[in-house]
Amino acid sequence: MRNSDIAISIKHLSKFYKTFQALDKVSFEVKRGDFFAFLGPNGAGKTTTINVLTGLSNYQSGDVRVFGHDVTSEYLRSRRLIGLCAQEFNFDPFLTIYQLLVYQAEYFGIPPWEAKRRANALLERFQLADKRQCKHRALSSGMKKRLLLCRALIHDPEILILDEPTAGCDLELKFLIWDYLAQLNKEGKTIFLTTHYMEEAERLCKTIGIINRGRIVRIGDKKQILQDKSLEDVFLEITGSE
Image (cartoon, rainbow, N blue to C red; front, side, top):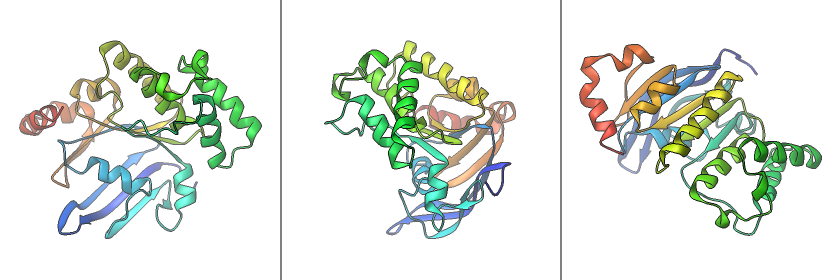
């Protein structure tokens, strides 16, 4: 990796959907090993930023890099460094959950024998081993959430990006996912999280970035951000978007 200290670097990123400006000269960095919460109300630009980082969306101007690799000109290198856990359950309906993970690993050039080993290990870790021959439609919504995490981690990425991973979860599942994420970060994963739950950001994250109407409002240490009285109206707008 070209730069082992900065996991994500975004400079002057602007993105338009026709005449609507979704991102307006967004700039921030995420350090290696950080647990970064990216907060903002609905429509603030969080998912658009994730889509740019993962190559799912183009952009009009700016510089976006993952460990020094440009996400456009070096897409394959940058994409291999990221595991994306999106909101949607977009699984192939014809494959078992074990096959889903094996095939996902092979997309990243992982040999079949290693793909199988990793799939089994992840299913065991996320308490899905007894469902390995089931298709995703037979799983509960909580199991599907865990399967999303398994798929995002199958190629052992340096960065895990999660777009509202506990939205719609009951308390038991939410706490379980929090424990998983805290352990992954402790093991060295850089985690980039979007959420509307302030408790989630407060419990898990080290650094908080706030975006609103496509512009960065504040980036900083969690404690300083959460204690800033000038941000109370923004926090109310964020939590009101749940």
